[in-house]
Image (cartoon, rainbow, N blue to C red; front, top):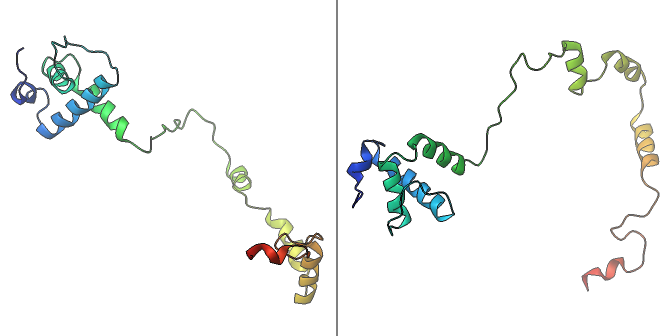
Length: 145
């Protein structure tokens, strides 16, 4: 084949825009070292890619899938089929999703604390060490100089 024209390829890939996308993708693959399926005949990569499409040595469907995969940013992961994994009972699902046992909540709800008691309890839980943002003297104030 001396010359490759769009008319030689349009019957293989009817949409001209898609033909350009597929040929450009194939030309980039050739440039990165992909195996040639036609003789190069001292042609440049875009011409070789069009010749491969025209001679059907590279299936257009394979090029299309490869192009889509190269453009995708989020690759879909196939979910397992329903029969492949055992189902978890409703009672175990609740526990696995982080929901607590409702029967233990009643014991805690019966204990009532005043606001002052709650604050004292929280202060007793605070760390004893001085904070790292300048609460212990030294050169804490010299940082901005």
